[in-house]
Image (cartoon, rainbow, N blue to C red):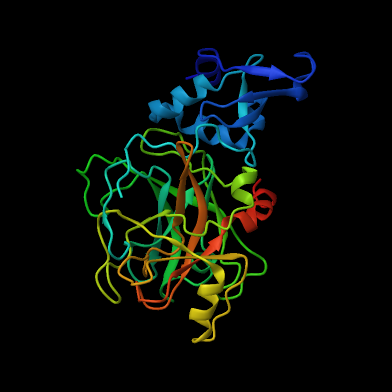
Length: 344
């Protein structure tokens, strides 16, 4: 079967050029996923080449490749990983007000949430023990400690699952997709609780659906300059529902207030922890609502103008939902340049 002509000669994608269509290197385009890319030969685009090889067995991949056509014969819109995704942070489910004190999320409510799977060295099963967030068609953002120091010495990070709802059900309507990890990048200055951020490059491009879409990064100037004090962002995850308690099979969500850094510093100083400006704290003063073990790496999400923006990455805390001790998050606005510079 000759794949390239069949896949590349069908649907078109809007392409524009900076100067002239005759200068192929200048052609920029928008991918079916809404990302900015360059119009190049499919054989020069590793992201789509991996889909091309699997297209005969996967109609979704074949359709995506057809929609990626641009320019001349066999040219496709190849995504640039560092571009902001158009239509990011959108969900088809209206939100209500693992999260300790959390409530079950509706199916598809948080389409960017990722579950990180660890393979047991002595058994073949996968354990889902950390979270993450899809930020474009190839990268998941998570906590460095989820990559560098797995939950157990017998576990190795092996998989990323997108589009999941109930971890122990195949009939919940979620239709999740598992991805292998091509590469992981941990912040070069990660030290225990500091710079707790990492990127996971997936083995192939993600095809976006209503249940699998990226979250927005806080690129707008109004968000970059904000402390987010007294804002009420959301946290989601499958972690423990109480300290040392059971994890949740179903994705849970909770809304927590951002706590100013000075108050957070005073609270954690009692335990020798230093809170920096690259961290953000959130949680109810009276306790009862918080992220917990197993939620690590997941996103802290703020709705803004109809889209959700990731402002934090779940990092650590004192116990879970303990009164007077908010959860601590890596502040994403402090790492936007790092994220961009470490994506291929």
